[in-house]
Amino acid sequence: MNNLQVVNLKKRLIYARRAALFILGVLLSLPTFALQLKESAPETYTVKRGDTLWAIANVFLNEPWLWPELWRTNTQIDNPHLIYPGDVIVVGYVDGQPVLSVKRDKPSYKLSPATDKRVKPKPVDVLSWTTISPFIRQHMLLDEESYASLPKLLGNQDGNVRFASDDFVLSQQQFSTDDQYRVVRKHATIRNLDGEILGIQVTHVSTASLVEKDEGSNTMLLFIDDANQEAKRGDKLMAGGFEHPEGFELVPATSQRGAIVGDLHDHDLLGKYDVVILDLGSMEVAPGTVLGLYSQGPAIIDEESPRYVDEPGANTGGEWFIDTVSQPALKVGEVVVFKTFDAASYGLITRANKGIKRGFIVAKP
Image (tube, rainbow, N blue to C red; front, side, top):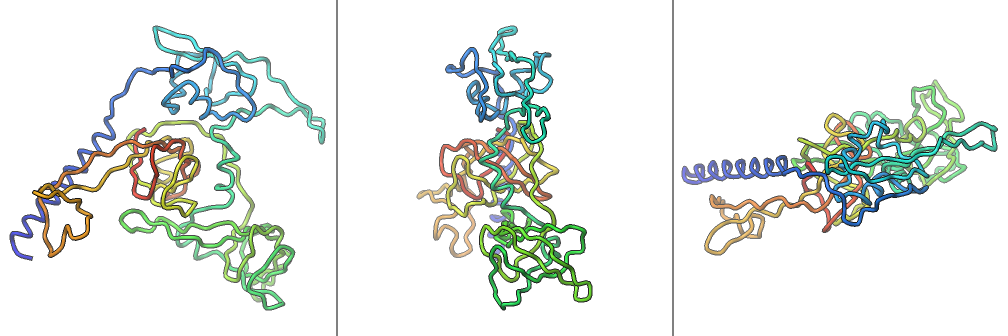
C-alpha cells in the first residue's frame, strides 16, 4: 500500500467515525414532546380478560412505552403496571396534561374448586403470555463453557440413534440432585456484528425423568417423558423444568444502543410479533425495556456516478474513497425485551413499518 492509499485510508476511517458519532448523537438526542393522547383515545376504557398492558397503552398512546407518565400525578395507583380485568380507566387532565385514574371495585376472590381456597385475581400481562411463552420455554442462550459442560445422551439398549416418548436412554451423568431434565439441542452460534460469539442458541427437544444413576460409570438411565420431537444421540441435558418470568414493567431505553444479531424463526425478514436476538445483555437491559428499531442504509460514495460502498466493484483494486455520505438511521418500529442473558436478550417486535433483519440498530425509542 503506497503513502497516498494510507492517507486516504486514515481519512476514510476518520470520516466513518465522525458519521457514526453523528448518527449515534441523533439517536440519543431525539427531541421529547409533551405527552399527548391519541385522537381516538376513549374517555373511559374497561379492562377485559385477555388484555395486555401494551395493548391498553396503545389504546391511549402512540408511544405506549410512556404509559407510566400518564399516572405520574395519581397517588391512587402505586404501580401503573398492575391493572386488573374489570378496572375502568378514566382520562382526566391536570394543568392541561392528560392523566389517567382507575375505578376499581374491591378485589373479588374466586374459590378454587380443588382447595376451597380464595384465589387472588391476577393483573393483566405486559405482553401476551400466549405469544412469548413458546420462546421462553423452547429457547435459551448459553455461554460456550456452560454448553460444553452439559452431559449428553449416549444411546439405548436397542442401538437406536433417535428416541421418542416412553423410551429409556442412557446419558452421561449430571452431578446434581435433580430428577427432572430437559433435553436440548444446539440450534446456532450467535455472534455480534463483529463476529464475536455471544452464546450458543439451544432449543427444547423433550423432557426426561431420572430412573437411576450408575456412579461407577458416571452414567444415568433416563425415561423420555414428553417429546416435542425425537431426541437424538448427542443431544444435551439441562437440569430442572421450565421457568415462568416474573412480572416486569415497561421502561424506555435511554442511552443503550445495540443491534439485532439473530432471531428465533430463521427468517430473512421479520415483522410484528416475531422474536429477535439483541446484542444487549442483562447488564444493559431488563425484561420490559422498550427500544426503537432503526434502519440505516449503506454509505454512498459521492463521485460523478454515485455508488453504495457495498455495491459490487465499488472497492476493487484496493481503492479507498474519501467522499462518502452516511445515511441517517430511520426509525421503523419498536421492540420490547422479555428475556435476558449475560451477553444477549430476546425481544418481541411490537411494531414494524418494514421488514426487520439482522444488523438493524436498536436504541432509544
